[in-house]
Amino acid sequence: MQIGIQVVEDHYQKYLEAAVWAEERGLAAFAIPDHYLYPRGDNESQPAHDALAVMAALAAETSTIELVVLVSPVTFRHPAVLAKNYATIQEIADGRLLLGIGTGWMEAEHQRFGIDFPSMSDRYAMLEENLEYLSAAFGSPPQNYSGDRFAFESFDIRPRPPLRLLVGGSGPKRTPRLAGMHAEEFNAYDVPDQDYPAKLAVAREAAAAHGRDPSALRISTSGIVMGGPTDEAAETQARHIAERLGRDPDESVATLRNRQRTTFGTWDDIRGALESFKEDGVERFYMQNVEPFDPVVLGATLDALGL
Image 1 (cartoon, one colour):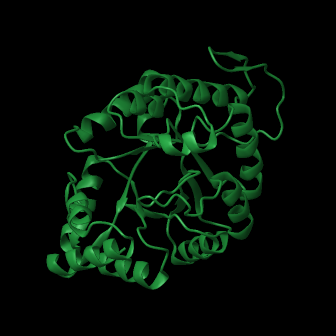
Image 2 (cartoon, rainbow, N blue to C red):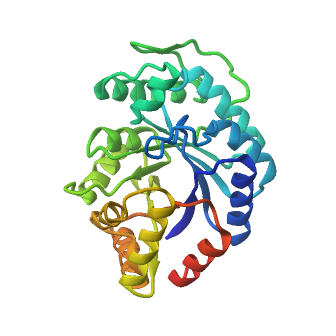
Image 3 (tube, rainbow, N blue to C red):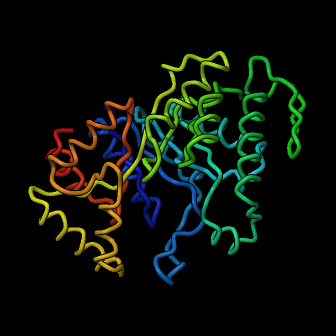
């Protein structure tokens, strides 16, 4: 299974340090989310950077690692703006950018910045139109597109790199269907009470129904990885981190445990969870950070897991 990391940092230099370390370590991908707000309790002043701007800079500072936006809400940008950002960064990255798109979920960031936050059904419709718009604009040749919200009049748009999309989200039907139709990668969360293999099957069936090779759709998932040689050691670590972040330790531990395949516990537990993902067809796992990037801690975790 390929391993990537997904980080949230408070300064560009920390993103750069983490990306360079991941590349030198030989990881498959370096990912960042796209949020305009990172609230911690009542504190909404945590620095938040525009993911596409960060990726443009990282594209110039790295050379081999895949750069992944995981993911950008469709509410943030008109698809024309998204298309031009993508094409520009892809040129800098020499094809290494994977653009993730999703419906968005954080209402607070929309409220604070005055961005419309439509209903979930409307956001799904926006996601579908964005994907169709981008597919039309980056086609060979480009095609006209006219939707309920957006329209593209075909012309020889330049630059026009190959379109590399990731669709991510937790939905069991609409999100995997759109991923199968349009994406190179489907980032699917393992949500309690959902049939995870069935969700992946929806994506592959949609790919086949639209003339795409279902085996070419890469399946990925993401999660916090926190472990130790014993379960007690892992819980102690989780409680210390929660206290440092001003969170309730009991609630944090419960959240980490409340997963179908938890990547929290002993190293053997975590290896077992990753193996079960692999058996379902997951080809890439993005390790998410809780605390600021620490190459010593992350390196020790990867070593303990044999990754």
